[in-house]
Image (tube, rainbow, N blue to C red):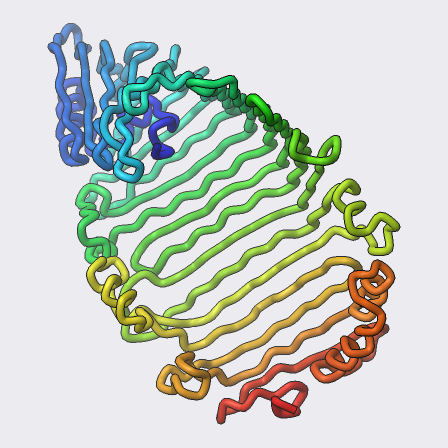
Length: 505
């Protein structure tokens, strides 16, 4: 099933998304809502309207849409639009309402029927003028999304999922000028997630409990009303742009699994994390990371009371161009896992005598460069032709190793480098554009690590001399203790050089 089936949905989101162009009278607000909903492909109906003393009450409001072949529908018993003395419009609605999902999953072919209950007692919403546009804000003491029923291929799945947020606030604004961005913000003091799943025809059970503190998000978009997913390249060229950032604080989680023969338990915490993303004509950027991971796992398949893992921080970021272009554009990729620690129960498997130092391990790879797409990567037919022909859909012109770091077992390898690629020469390196440039690497503690691995029996003593000879071929001593340096270069003729000596030696 797709993740959105069990996702968190609120009435605030349902109204905020199509709120573009809200006016400041009750009737106009309601009419604008309907018009905007239609522009987003949503079908809206109701059971009747009544107006009295500047208050418009709409009963039996139904909003439905098709999402990847699934029919998603919401029915709200009552929505009221009340004109305020300050020129704004207050919006209230039923404290709870159902969201239904029916259809066949396009990936699995399974028939899915689900009912989700959304409860938000005490929610208050206000629409007001914002420099000719509309500003929308809401507050909710609590917001709960509960899976009330789930069927897959008409079989009832005994699953309970409850997502609860507390002290939520949000805002949404649309300027009157065409082409102005739509901006939104959301905050919640905390969120809890409770999952309880039972095997339909067996004894298996799974429970998951999690809490998240201090959730905040910001987003903006341009060209959303006219977005046409059939031609993404054209959309981006015409100014389509979405950006967003979300952050969260402390996280705790626990899971418990059991079936007829196996059990597993896990607990963990995070100190925080977040995600930052954007998509526009300038390219795609994506950055996700977390800090302070601390996990403990136990189970019937683990030959220890428990296994523990810690990590100070982890991050993955990507920046790439997305449109076909004549000139090269920048790209970047970075992944980092810092301060990784495993428990002594794992160390004791291969180093019971504690020969290796237990220092936290770190891996960092930071790349940058320039390149271009030679065709429209959103064109499925063109990409299929590329796959069948084996011709690259783009060209990379420069690559820079901004940072490389691997620290483990008391040794640290680091490096930087820059290369230019000649895309007209695919013969020197057998189908790969010929590089020209150099990279410098530094290894500290390598001999000490080699000695320790020999003591542990992982490298036989009769092979140590061969390993040292190989090291001497690719590296030279540095000025520091147990330091080795190596320069790897490719000259303009495609010759590989190690510390100035051509390869092969």
